[in-house]
Image (cartoon, rainbow, N blue to C red):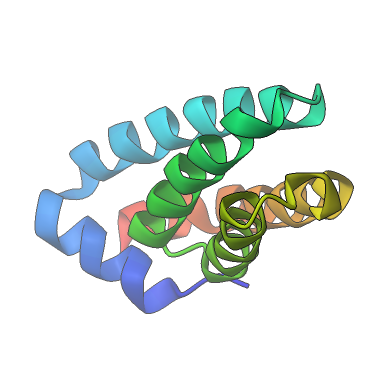
Length: 110
């Protein structure tokens, strides 16, 4: 679900304090993006929302979420955005978020 090596690499690159700031900012922006996607945006916006979320997820090591966003982005680009399962995306994000937060204090102290 989460590439903890990527999480550790990012933390090492930017430092523990900045990592916590980046992680907090990601979670806020991801929460907002998930809300927008759940609300059923126009099909033309789905691809860009998923692209944004994919990039953030990759940077933070949320591998499963990033793959799901990539799949959805491909559907959106092919004109099949309505085939994308936004409920599954929300479930994967919620589980990833919970796992990330549960380990976050340990990551920042490592």
